[in-house]
Length: 114
Length: 116
Image 1: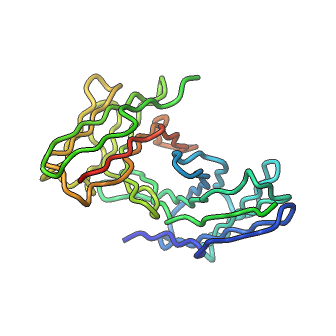
Image 2 (image 1 turned 30 degrees about the vertical axis):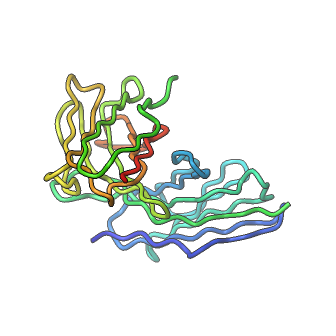
């Protein structure tokens, strides 16, 4: 059973602070990792993808991947109230029958306080 | 570029009734997915199609759920008969053929199902 674990929330940070979201995964051969943002009552929206070890930056978002530790994180700099949402970590793995599928964590709810 | 379309957006049915959801993927996306998202959890894959063939349906409760993707474009997901525990948001997603390279899935708005 492939598992994706996210740090338990909810997480609250003041406006302008750095929000740090963490994720660990069990499938050692996983190669692709994604962060989705989901506003309440909305569907998940892809915000970051990362495929190799190290950091990947996109605007205020930085994804970090450490395959040896089976750990992926998302940093949000200069957090804004509009960043308040649930952040889902998703890991690509090979399912039975060789199909590639995403396994999602249960999400971390982030609240940015004005 | 139009996104993934789904209908209906909301549905309320009684247990033991049947229900069907429709999905139209992003144009050119060969792979289509149906997910179930229960409140407070991440999406769980039910079935994955590539063109009009099933790639993975290992987590689909086949005694009550069925899905098809005729002509490799639109798809329908059906539940018959529904149970109380089927209350969830049903999400459709699509991606390009994920045989290699980027594997980014894009989600539709979802259908919120309430079974009473």
